[in-house]
Amino acid sequence: MILTAIPAQGELLTQTARYWFEETADICPNHVLDYPDPNVVVGTRLDILPVEIVVRDYLAGTTSTSVLTKYRNGERDMYGIRLPDGLRDNEKLPEAIITPTSKALDGGHDEPLTRDEHPDARPVVGRAMGQLSHAMRWRCLRAAKRWPPNAA
Image (cartoon, rainbow, N blue to C red; front, side, top):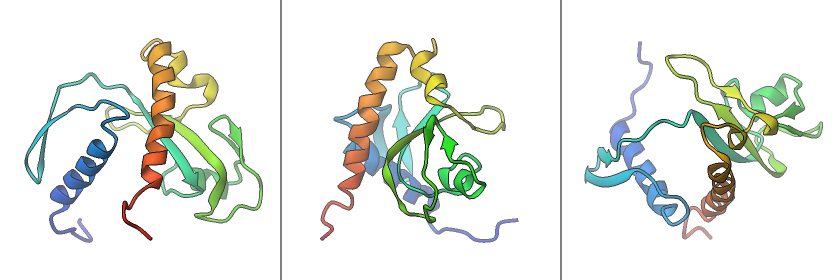
């Protein structure tokens, strides 16, 4: 059952992705070749890297791996760092944190990775890619903080 529908959802998602792919193209290469239609992206075929890396500035989220969900459940040690007691929902964190998760395939659940389990220690990524992606993550966060571009 679908409780609600978002008009032009595919176009909205494609154009949002397009904005960020273009905004961060100088930071990290991506797979995009063309946008022949507002609802279509053509990209290079890639091998999946089964890791999602999010740099978080706020205590927010809704999934089981989100910092807010874990914090509400009493967890303070997560993703290899310790958060202080007394933070409120959606509050700006004392400093931005990196929250890597494994990307589950075939309907499984993503799992948090700690610094010790971080992908740059895994052969699938390799040390060079891990170090490069570390720099990219922080540059992408700085780009995101500049959004929206003309906000007063």
